[in-house]
Length: 254
Ligand SMILES: Nc1ncnc2c1ncn2[C@@H]1O[C@H](COP(=O)(O)OP(=O)(O)OP(=O)(O)O)[C@@H](O)[C@H]1O
Image (cartoon, rainbow, N blue to C red; front, side):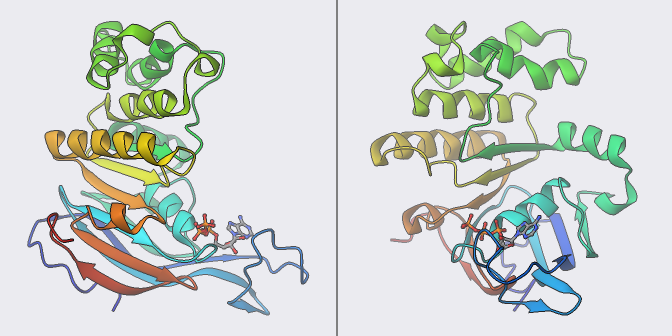
């Protein structure tokens, strides 16, 4: 039921049509995640014809077994990888129409990304990490804006700390501040609590959903945690490189 179950009636921010991602086949036993379910002579199909639409301001949880293609799908939506076939449109822009430089500019303007492993620059302080996207955007008000962003995630006392001087939860808060500081229309999050203990993960997630709602950001969240997926407006199941189910949810569903 790819692309169906789009109940919100909101205008689409993301439209992905018939996405295929095929990589060269590897000899048996070499695939690090033990995939290969869609192995064939021409290569390994990591994604096999995925279509989906995500409404502006919607929160969509992506769930599915390890190796099913969730991160690969997110990379295509981010424009960090290009599909072998198919098309991703974000707002009015078809990502495949852009060259690498234009794609990087588009991503900086439109998309924030949060990873399981935080991905902060280790030699930069919290403030400097949050400044990076503002400086790339040529913003003159960088320091004040980055400082306010860190204050909004409760880290005004940690501006000068390096990532190694911060806890995991604090590092992910810096990553959230960095992702939201340019007010992106789209936030892509790949297992953002995967490296955090339960309590810290819950507080980081509460913060992420509160920023998402405050700014009306569209959210695509990969998670193994059913409770997190249930906080989204919709839940997509990915299996063997396909979207196999699309469940609308209400935020107050159990
Ligand atoms: N560049 C690549 N070259 C070869 N195989 C790849 C490549 N990228 C991903 N894969 C394979 O594609 C499959 C899907 O990987 P992906 O990371 O998207 O899955 P996932 O659902 O996010 O898994 P997890 O939940 O474990 O993070 C895996 O079998 C993986 O090994």
